[in-house]
Amino acid sequence: MKPIWIVDDDESIRWVLEKALARENLATQSFSSARDAMQALESGTPQVLVSDIRMPGASGLELLQTIKAKHPGIPVIIITAFSDLDSAVSAFQGGAFEYLAKPFDVDKAVELIRRALEESLRETDVEQSSANAPEILGQAPAMQDVFRAIGRLSQSNVTVLITGESGSGKELVARALHKHSPRAAQPFVALNTAAIPKDLLESELFGHERGAFTGAQAMRRGRFEQAEGGTLFLDEIGDMPLDLQTRLLRVLSDGHFYRVGGHQSLKANVRVIAATHQNLEHRVREGLFREDLYHRLNVIRLRLPSLRERSEDIPILARHFLTQSARQLGVEAKRLSPQAMQFLSQLELPGNVRQLENLCNWITVMAPGQTVEVKDLPQDLIEERSSNFQPTHTHTHTTSSAAPAEAHGGAGGGASYDSDGGAERSWISLLETEAAQMLAEERPEVMDILGRQFEATLIKIALKHTHGRKNDAAVRLGIGRNTITRKIQELGIGGAEDD
Image 1 (cartoon, rainbow, N blue to C red):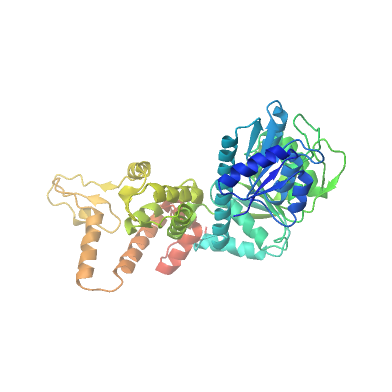
Image 2 (cartoon, rainbow, N blue to C red):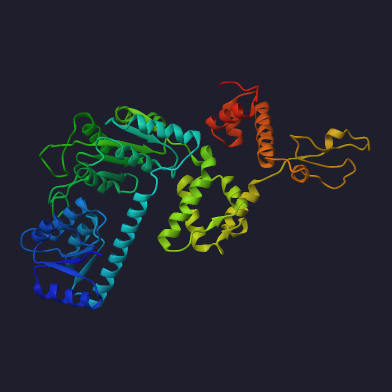
């Protein structure tokens, strides 16, 4: 573990913190000025940095800005006076982990440093596990199209607009585009424009000069400057205010911008990748998004499929997330039973991959036992699935005992009844009977045979319902267009139109 850096021109404060942390068996390194600490950053980094805000020469806020630009994952604790509220606000705006108000209690200071240390170590673990994990998981045809697009764009610096539902993995695709681009050795900087208050977003993007507004105690570099030479990822671009859209258009047009409160034009060498879950064409028509900016961003559009369109990827994603969450918690990874995996694969999951990841984290913490059954999953999912599943029943309304035999079954029928109101015989019981007979006969590939018959029946009925239109049939079945096309070819199904 790296040492904790203490930066303060007051020797007594350095001495107190050094002794207190030494009692906790924590290594420290002290500096009497921010400049000394900045120079030390050229050859090493701390696990946590604790800095006074007011020192001769460079201030603690300047040091904060420097370390956040180069090493954004390092927690920084700022020491400030009770009366210096503006400085505390500026510290948080600059990304400080927390601040200590003078005079401070030593035990509370150590406790705060401990929390920052845990955060730092957790960030390190996540970075290492992320580095070892595949960039993007997916075997579905829809994801193969995405992988091919990333490959084609690998040597390009062109602007890309990624569209897709929330939670579908747009930032992962942006990171992959950066990693496989000529800018891979330079910074990748991400900003969710919907998560930043409007009055702070301009400063976040373009930075600000000292004194540009209340609390601007020091000059601050914005995301464009932080991403110099690399890639700037602007997520949820559809939510950007109109006045900032104008400024962004200027940067994309001629590559120049001004810091807030600044008078010197700065040149940006940045590749912009934007993403949105919204329909930008609709927002342009509604006057909420500039048409000229839309065309600047929409050079190459890459649509990311929802999880509903790649449900065959759910098992591999679930296993990956269960392994990942178990590693982070230091426990053995849990396994989903075949029934539980099938249950998950049939869920709507409107939150897409992010919702599946959160669900796997819940399973790791809450589910009893190592093998997880359907009953061990969150109760609200089970209830929602049950309430949404309405089996179709075919009732035979006859008074004669000579009802036609077709009323009692068939490949496409639901549950059927005897004409005199006898016991129900569902299609599941018919499937059980057929499977039992095939297993008794020791016929090979029972799962494959019955699975193909089941899929073929569903697709044929859907195509009949939509008069042969593949796209409509895919929507009705809740699968992707590429999936139904592949299934039609594999199963040899006729009667489909190329719509």
